[in-house]
Length: 407
Image (cartoon, rainbow, N blue to C red; front, side, top):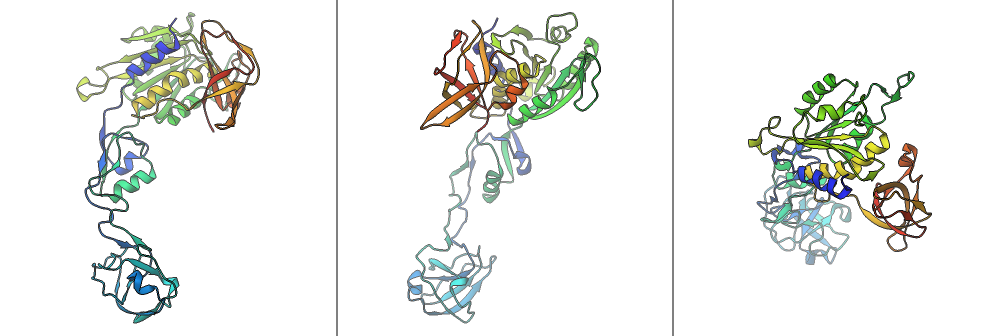
């Protein structure tokens, strides 16, 4: 039996970051920056009007009197030289005349075109976007490891980048296995259950930062499963097989995995969960010379609670590592438990719980049906209590480690 720590170490050792790609901006959304992005010039290059109004010397506007309007500058206009004691009508985004140091907004004037009556004083710098305000030449505007979102795309475009080097989003294929599985919404026959794993694990993979699709349900037929695995290996960076993992004669996954190099099935010292297949199919699927480490293959137990918790403990950190994420694990808080429960000896126990509190006041964790594989309890939880394998009793008031699932 492998410890949780050993199994996690083995999974993370195989989860090398995806080789970087040079992609257009639209394809970088959600990816991790692989190379620092450095501004080649100041943005903006020169001071600019931050609003429609009148460019002035702030000292000339203090008296809130009239000034002659000597010119007007649209957004695409040339940069003028300012004459003290005058005003220049400027559009928001227009270059500020050299020597002017403020912009009086239109609404604080009579909007004159030959001369303007100013109704408010301004301070130096007011109404002005200074040169380099968004980015300084030579500065790193997006550091490697940044997850690209809308604001990062805006900054990259502002500094003139049309492409970014990023870690591509890992591709995940989830294959559910079992003659008993029926799509949700379809009528159940005797001995069948709805497939509760497929949608859940695809969503879990996407939440971890991957692009995921589902295949199946696939019947308990070794030949069919071998064909499905061979087909999906060419479109996945992580192939997840769910179900069919027990040691009985009806379970097919162990036999199919035995035909793949470096893939093994282990009993993991964790509950719920416990049984997991894991390994890497190298080179033959993704050529070694392109830097790809191969396809990771993972097999999870079929019970939805077992599958989701095994994914959470091992595959979620692996996917984040593959994507190039800096933070692999969920936030962890220490919480005092509201009531006692027994934990099995020699096993790391993962217990759904609700955690309430604050950093200042401390946190309280209420376990939800510990020792019972309840999908309803897992759905109600906002955290997971992780009980070490050498703990057999959790007493009320004990401080426990909690992985925070949601705020």
